[in-house]
Image 1 (cartoon, rainbow, N blue to C red):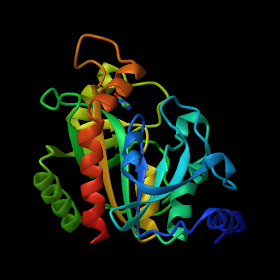
Image 2 (cartoon, protein in one colour):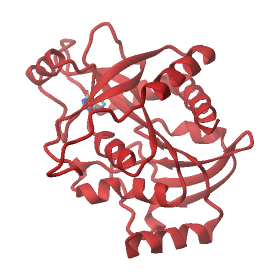
Image 3 (tube, rainbow, N blue to C red):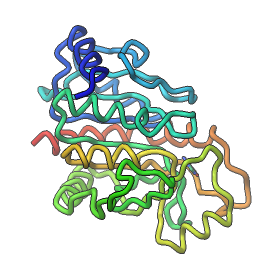
Image 4 (cartoon, rainbow, N blue to C red):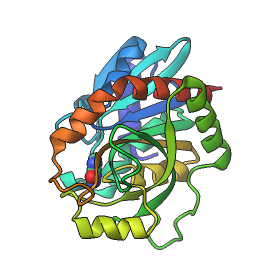
Length: 263
Ligand code: HPA
């Protein structure tokens, strides 16, 4: 463990137990899940040594320890992105912290653009594969692992969604750096390459968690049709509006998946 991580863990433990086997990372506008946590203890990211803090609207930026029923849970509400100017090390630092706190199962969520007309905004998607199109990797110089998400976990999460009565698609997530949304031509390219959703997060976090030996699940909230699918420009407000519209279903799904992962 680096000195900075040790310092961060010491600081976090001074604020409370912050022990849990399961953690959730909440993306843009998906923060209302935290309201279902009992006995929450909150630490602003700004207080944690070395922790990167986001500049994006809709990212609150705090680590919360709380309980779902009697199950302890850690939640990172907010994250940073590469396009904000952070290094790869900074983007994955929160994952290292969660791992150092004892997390074994990580549920990553994000807002993503839908690349398929048949998957309208508001639908939720379970990521089965990643396309790392960021041009960067924590596996620099090595082969990136082909399967981050375990078959058994994927089918467990699908069953959980069915039981909860929440529609959940399967799909491939293409991770790009941003900072802009894509061009219609890029989206056509991604569709031809087999992507179903596109976004600017999740790829490095998933790879880092996998490398640290965590069991990783990633869910996308499809917040908008990607560029060129409709004859209208994209804007960040639609991303926020859609996530707010589906946040109840989304939160319920996250709760149920957490319970499944906690066993
Ligand atoms: N493209 C990239 N990232 C996104 C999108 C999109 O359309 N929607 C939400 N995040």
